[in-house]
Image 1 (cartoon, one colour):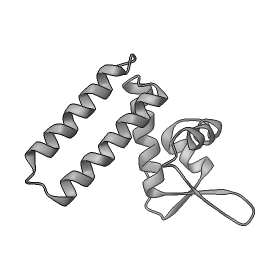
Image 2 (image 1 turned 90 degrees about the vertical axis):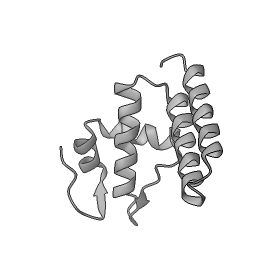
Image 3 (image 1 turned 45 degrees about the vertical axis):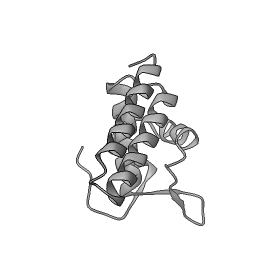
Image 4 (image 1 turned 180 degrees about the horizontal axis):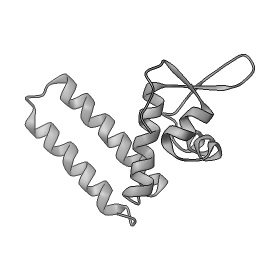
Length: 113
């Protein structure tokens, strides 16, 4: 399902976009601290577009790539770290290579990959 162009999504909408039940999204919120939807005064979750994109990435890692939750968390953290390195000074090839070696070691440690 294509992602509609809007600022906030309710849990039912995210469930349909991602193709997972709402209880899975609630579980992932506990496991992946980067998912943090806003709450309405009544407590309803409102996911931002970046949350939905992260949920889609998590689903890909867990369902398609067969990562464990721990492995997916480590992979996402390593990717975030790599983005910071690239954003600061893209000419530092040695730093990028070191980050890639870290990612490779994470993948080797993950028994599901």
